[in-house]
Amino acid sequence: MRLLTREAVLAFRRAPLLSALSVTTIAFSLFTLGLFGLVALNLREALRGIEERVEIVAFVLHGTPAETVTLATQDIAAFPEVQRVNYVSEDEALERARRELVEFRDAYRDLQVNPLPASIEVRLREGHRDAGSVERVAERLRGFDFVEDVRFGREWVQKLDHLRNITGVVGGAIGLAFAAVAMVIIGVTIRITLLQRAREIAVMRLVGATKWFIRGPFLLEGALKGLFGGALSLLLCYGGYLLFRDSSEGTLAGLVFFTPAHMLLIVVFGVLLGLGASVLSVGRQLRNV
Image 1: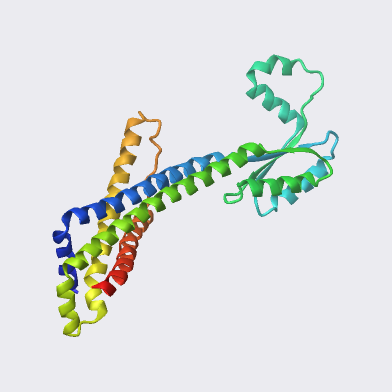
Image 2 (image 1 turned 135 degrees about the vertical axis):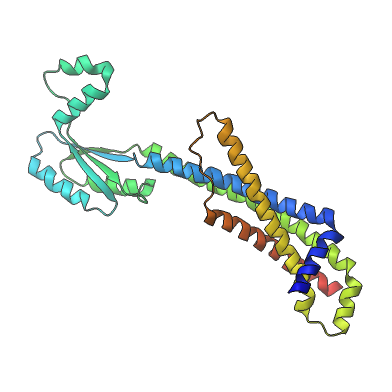
C-alpha cells in the first residue's frame, strides 16, 4: 500500500499542470453542482415554511346542522394526509374579516345579515403538501353533500412543485456536464502518465507483476484527484455561501449550509468521479502500452 501511495503521489510531480487541471476541473464541476445543491437546499427550507401554510378551505352550505359538521370534521381529521382540522363558524368568519380586513371594517360593522359562509380549514402533514396530495384531499372534501366549494390555491401549489423540480433538474444537468469534462481531463492525465512510464510497465510485466499491481497507482491517483477536487469544491461552496450571506445585509441571514452528511457525499462523489475516470482510461490505454 505504501508503494501504491508513493507512486500515486509521484504522478502529481511528473505532470503537475495536468494534475492541477484535473483537480480544479473536478472542484469546479462539484462546486457548480454544490451551488445548485445549496440553492435547492435553501429553497426547500423556504418552501417548507411556505408549505406549512398550505391550507384547504371547504365552504359549508348555510343551514347545515352542527352535528353533521362535527361528524365530518372528525372524519376529515382521520385522513392520513391531514394534520389539523379547524371549523370556522359564520360568526367567527365575520369577526375574523373585521379584524384582518381593516379597510372594510366599517362595511362589515354595518351589516344586517352576515354574508360570509362557515368553513372547514384543513392543514396537511409534512410530506403531503405537494400538488397531487392537496388535490386528492380537496376532491374528497368535495364529496361531502354540505360542502359548497373547496379552495386551496391550485396554481400557487403547482408553481411551488414546478420551481422545486426545475431547480433540481437544472443543477443536476450542469453538474453532470462539468463532471463529464472532469472525467475526460483526468483520463488524459492518466494516459500521459501511462505513456511516460511505458518502459517501466513493460519491465514489470516481464518480471510477472499482476495487472492490479500495475493499475493500482493510477487508480489511486485518480481517486486522490477526486478527493482533493471534492474538498476544494466544499471550500468554494462555503466561500460562496459566506459571500451571499454576508453581502445580503441580513436579508439572507437564515441561509443554511450543507450538513456533514451532504459534505461527505460530495467528497465521496469526487473520489468516485476520479476513480471512474482512471478505471476507464487505464483499462483502455494499458492494451496499447
